[in-house]
Length: 383
Ligand SMILES: *Cc1c(COP(=O)(O)O)cnc(C)c1O
Image: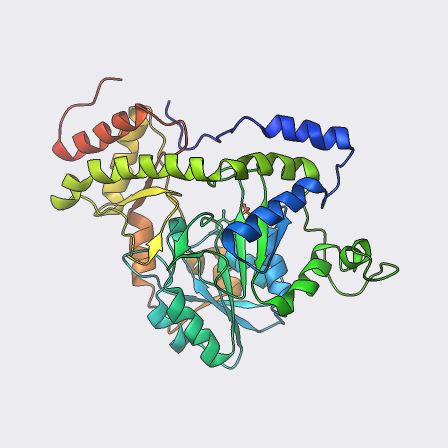
């Protein structure tokens, strides 16, 4: 079987973990966490980076930092992972879903302004597949209406928009190091703070609502409960693992991009023949090859191609059930403007993700052969 994903191990992870063990540093915010935070600050240019135990945790911190109160509205796409919305719903916020662009499958920036009401507090662009949203427009809208921008850059580590790292453009940004992402620690994430005014409170929220971080820097003489918060930091074993991955980030990205381009070139004739559509990367974006997806003409074709791939030993997957139509989305969110979710509904039925991981080699040609043969009506390939 060719799996959909295979976590890549760089080699130094266990050595780093042994170091943390030897040093007797097991709780959070030890040397490895500091190294990871510094790497993120250097590589993204953010004001401050704080490692978290997941991107979900970073989104929850962002919702607290944005001071989301019951009834406050947060504009976001419906075509995203549940945590994008859930983090705000936990604070009583209301996700207001707008449709996506048919080219990048990112939030349609031209629909945002009309979705703003007196209750709107924030905009949450999600950089789907590590390809940036139209951030200049989104930041302009936010400035005009005095809103916060929280980038869900879970899939966007090492990607840029007009040369700026994803997650380092809005007031806040969140990254994921879940094993299905490009750079991993099993579970893991980070909050990038770009607005310096939010930095001190972010540290407090992450440390159970205490000023423990200032205490350790010698800025206060005792530490105590000063705000709401929770435990959002990972232990050092996770950070030690992640540190080894960060060292290899350029290499990982390069290898993923090579696989991505291989798919992209090999599938060009099928796109020209009108059988499928390939991902679109705008000129302003440098992406990180987080995923390779194809868009088929219908749900029926997707189901049939997936079954064909499965029969040939290839695991392909699709996602997301649009949040506005999910049970919790119906209960906690609303669609802006009553029913304009055409692209979200249509594209989510037709999207198929193909295996992409460092270590995928000749198998990629088997995957491609199955796809090409499916459309050319040939017999099954022998594997
Ligand atoms: C993976 C993902 C998340 C959640 O990341 P975790 O680290 O698993 O919490 C959130 N948003 C998007 C868009 C994602 O792809």
